[in-house]
Amino acid sequence: MLRFIGSVTVLCGIAIFAAGPRPSFAQAVGTAASSPTKVYVDCAATSRGNGSAARPYWRITDALKKARALRRENQGRISIRVAPGTCSGNFETQPIGQSTRPPELLPLVLNVPNLTLHGAGVMEYADGYPVGPRAGTATTLTVDTEHPGDIPTTVIYVGPTTDGGRADGAVIEGFVIDNALNAWFGIYITRTQRLTVRDNVVTDTWLGAINGSECSGRIVGNVVHRGFPGLAFGAGTSENPSRLFIGGNSATDNFSGGVLIFGNSGFTDYLDMGANPLEVLPRPINPKSSQLGNRIEVDFEGNDVSNNVLGLRFSILGGSRYPYAQTGHISANVHENRFIDNAGYPLVVDEGFVFRGTSSFWTDPNPDPTNFPEGFLAFFAAPFMTHG
Image (tube, rainbow, N blue to C red):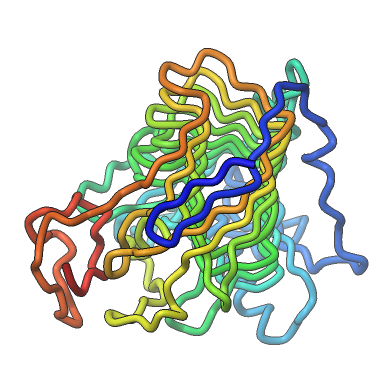
């Protein structure tokens, strides 16, 4: 047992073994007993279509809109099945009146319970770890236009929206998400339970490839590289706990670290949604203690965490989204992973981001997230700080 004691902070239950993974992780999640309602997409289609197998939609954007309509009348699982090929998109205002396929409206917003977003990619393995989709099977999401700004963007957003949508039970599988350094995050997840993210490749992001906070579920069989970091997950609350199984992933060649685990709610939910009319459900400016995520439980098994700057990092205090965090709790079981040739340390345990650089107050109900009080660290401060 490794115990780290800070300001009422305990990290416990870490055991590390160097051994091979179990490739069955990617197939370890069961499927629903009943057949899901299916909506089809082919980004190479020459017309908009109606979502049927014979006339698939030409954009995932259209299929998601259909899924929201279906959910109002159907409580079963809805599956969006996307054919092999490339689906490009951006964050800009949509073109009007064109006869060719318009770009995907990014971010793609998953706010429908029990929704599966299924790409056609079939993962290949080397040395027992995932490396990429089999030739000819890849469903690739790309960002074709840089969207500059100080507020983070993401290709896929999974979480609650102001219209009452939630994403509990969401599944994302079989995609290649290539940000081409034109967006900050690949997949951003918040306040979502019973989540499954499996068999995806996420690459070339400005920040994290797959990021989550206040979410529970399984992150299995994915490849994340050239992220900052590859996987990053923050703690949860009693309402939205963070309990994760992270297994059988390849987190390699990431700039900051392969995997980062925060002992409290990390990063920011203040996202630039571009031209998408759906909005992230905001956080309270002055949260109650019950709304402060400060506990995460992780089973970290059978992953390849190699060739990063840092390997697996546990940071007690996260991105300071709320008033300065005072406690963080991480319970982690780490076993049967591979750590090779990380430039720094394969395993790091530290206090995290302890900001004490300002006594400024930020209580404006509509703060300017680009005007950070002195002493804060850029986007990590977000617009949710209320005292120093």
